[in-house]
Length: 185
Length: 163
Image 1 (spheres, rainbow over the protein chains, first blue to last red):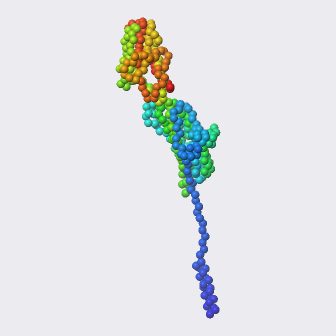
Image 2: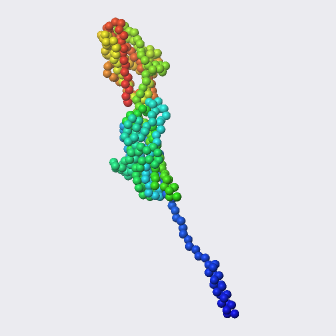
Image 3: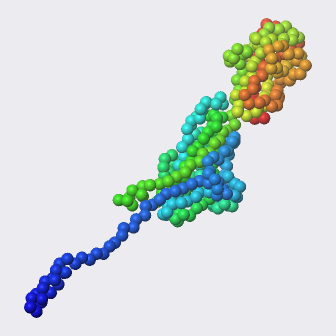
């Protein structure tokens, strides 16, 4: 009888080995590079939309002004990775306005006949960019010309625009230059 | 694959710059709106001939800023055998007077107020609004003595500058 129990005990032991299970786990963590850039007014609020220059003389150079009440731009950087900031411009021929022949303005490295010069540069709220920090913008498609590289996660900056009016023009119409600021990883 | 896809992603925001440049321009038209060619007159010595409505010069300001109008006159007769007349404030030998006044209506002005045009530009209108127009009316005082039968060609130059 003791022998019978002994065999049975061995059998049960073997059974438990066969049906036993174990587990371990791992997790996948992933974060997607997220780009989010908003242009705000110099006081770091609102939405920056237009820099109205009104009427200017041929060849005149205009720079956005400093201070929280100035007309420069605050770039609100909500990207979660290191990025480069660049800019490009798009212009169109104005509709006939009765003053000369509407002619397309283009961006150049220097102002000329129906050619304007557009520059972007990082400054501070109370100071314009240093001379070496201005970048001429001639690109007309994204991402454009880089004016600031390797910007840390979430690091905002104050952006200044410098505009040189064409040295001669063919019309007296209002011209609009659309400038887009782009962040790329 | 996810990393590659996100690397191509970029975000941007935009603003625009609006600007215009002063543009100065004008046209001289007939009262019907055609380009003004000339004012043909015949005169004897000492004659005074003033423009009448069909001959008025319609000055149309094509500038996008207010302007001033200056004017001058000179004898540009091409025949070198003809003694050229000199613009003057009073009539005289080989000297003529050309007076200019402005009006907004098609009625002969009384020339109570006028400018005498000379060889150097003089200001006719000191402030002229954008998009406005005015009639220029001339009065010609012929020289007191000159070679008979000669045809003179007088050229009036208008200069428009930012006011």
